[in-house]
Image (cartoon, rainbow, N blue to C red; front, top):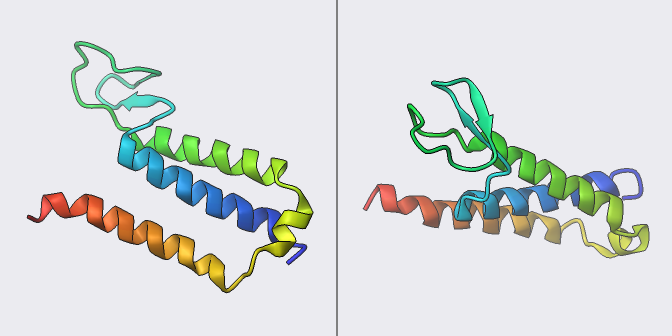
Amino acid sequence: MKTYGRLMIFSLVACIAYTLAYYFEWSLFQYYFAENSIGFWEQAGASGPPILWYGWLATAVLAGAAAAAAIPRRWIARLLPDLLWLVPVVLIFAALMYERRWFM
């Protein structure tokens, strides 16, 4: 638990941050493929839709790294490894509920 504690916190927080960024479309930046440019806000008159995935991923990595660096080791030691599977299962369920709009 000591060795992998920071990695575990990074993974959990990054997973939560990615799901929230995906759900609320909080993208750190937007990539416009047709123009090969990156913007920090929506560009009016762009020749195509932005790709938000890169921004969502960057948001998740920054949130996970900040949490892994900020959370003390004694808090990490209190987390039960068996209960940590609950977070990804809940987030997968939340993503499926969000995406059901495409199938109904």
